[in-house]
Length: 279
Image (cartoon, rainbow, N blue to C red; front, side):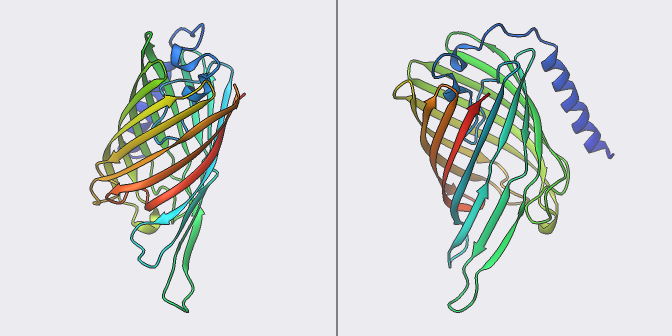
């Protein structure tokens, strides 16, 4: 193991230990409880993660599919991913363990008339992490998160080396209006087929939510990376959508995302559908 991997492992272990050392919470914090609590608890469909953590002994399952159009292909094409799954397990001490299994990805670029489209498909990397709620009051909540992207996936969509991310999440809620800011830093690598180079990035993410009823919530989000890839510079995207609670423990959602600037995510626009379950 090289020094960089050792540093990632040490920081991740220290963060995990500190999270588990806290005293278990007696009840969810205000934004995460009540009949509409699942709407605040879920990470999806936003790119930014929720400031809420899964209650101890419970599990959240999130999954979905996206279909969109790639950026930079004049002839058109497709860029699709699924199942966009995230599994979150409630731990003692206001903490949770996060596991993001690999996504299957399909991309195509249309050629000239009479020429078949060029297609690639494969699996992305696996990510694991820990989220810890630092504190809250009636309206505010503070949370920290550490994630490790494993050297995994295939050569086209995977991670060539070990990646790491550290995020700070602050949320504010007052009545039906909610605002969440996530600020993070990452160190990650390109897929092997793209050269496998490492790059670092600063990642701000702002989400605004409006709870129309106890079951229905609308949201809008804008997020960016200072480096959307190796030597690619800033990239900014925006998305918005709706979430609906079929039951207090079962949510469905619909979203639409668009490219704003740069090339973050490789798409010009996409549509996504998904669900969230509290078990």
